[in-house]
Length: 203
Image (cartoon, rainbow, N blue to C red):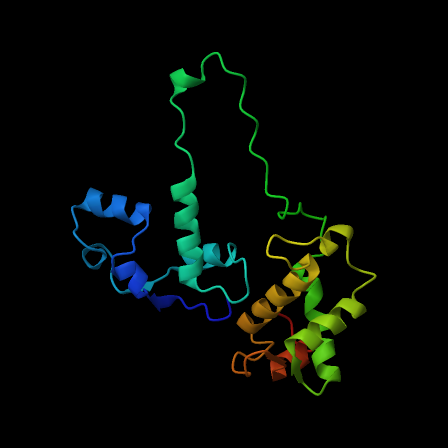
């Protein structure tokens, strides 16, 4: 979600006739005839909502709309909860299991452990490099530190450690250690990133 913004405009799909069932229900509940009456064309997210969206990214190129639409469609597909009297006499329902991709704490390398290897790789390449080159070099540098679950393939088809390398880059951009103005596909050190790598800066 490299283009994530805390304020974003809704696409025509949201404002036109292609409404999800969730939006239709909301319209009926509010007595509105169109999404324009229910939702403003621009939404400003709170910090809490912004962080919640970040946790639900499936692809690095996800936009806020991608995440929200995906959640709405999942909600539309979810079966209605049975009434309590319908459960009497039935076997206990199987406990909800966490998705295989959600690794337990300690079973994967902490994201912050990727920071210095990423910064070191960029420093060795003069301060900037293509994302794929950085990720490959980070993988070789961290090979002995990665845990078994770091090598699992995620639902999106990417190996976990590679995906976490991308998220580590996103966090470092937020902290000012990597540039947020570099060309698409290029990762670039900032002065603060160099200072953090040398131990002269704590974040």
